[in-house]
Length: 357
Image 1 (cartoon, helix red, strand yellow):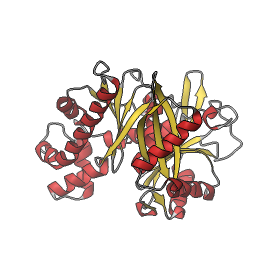
Image 2 (cartoon, rainbow, N blue to C red):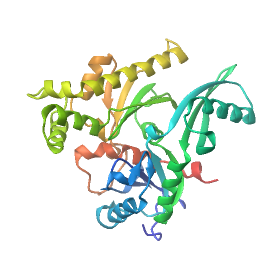
Image 3 (tube, rainbow, N blue to C red):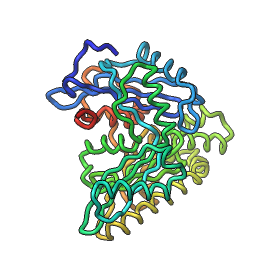
Image 4 (tube, helix red, strand yellow):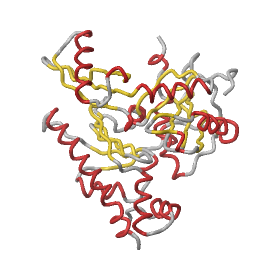
């Protein structure tokens, strides 16, 4: 992380993205070329997931050791800055769209606080709170609110300090995914985006901005463990079956579908719920045009086809960062691993004007 290098995408104040997941970390930095943004450096490393407890980094030394290992041994390309944007898992945050009367700034702040006190099971003084108005009508201000327990954010800041990094932004993973989604050729279509992490699937409706979010326990590791338990095999064997065969036609298709049925049922129920929410709030004439899957857990053969058949709406997998950005001569990760860099690529896209005055 030397300071004497310079990139041109963020001019004098570049930053890199840091995504801390369930036992893994990912980093990525973008630079600028005549063609647009390019990946200048990226990498991943693993750590003992027990270094986190309910979202709080309880043993930062373990993750710090993994970060040093990543930069010393596993970094592809270069990270040239100590300024970092960090993602917190969406399921560790409280996100909600609120329909409030049109208010001035001070009144809106008070109204948001009152609403948060009603639906978040954490005292207001123990939360960091942020919000933005997503839609204004003659009578209503629709405001998207994110609240995060302070002990979670503070533990991430402590890790950054231990690593001598300047944390300039901390945001939910879904916000990062939505930022990358804006680079999609079909991002002008009202969409449901599903970010499949290790433990959860985060579901959002995006129409130029995030309108609502939800989470279900349907992540990649959840799927793998379900296959393991159903077939009575090792976790590694289950992972191989999931990524090689998935829900595609094969000799194990029926068993895999049976294993994943409970998690998939929860996923479909929640997708239908957010679709009803959108219709109720924005009218039956505004239709959701597509469902887009992102994240490392989305790399399951046949999942998109199964969801399309079940929900009767087009489902596709989002392009990985290497299909969105130039990557010069950098060695690419394995095909199966490319989708897991979606969140960190969205972080790396943060414009400097968002974090510096």
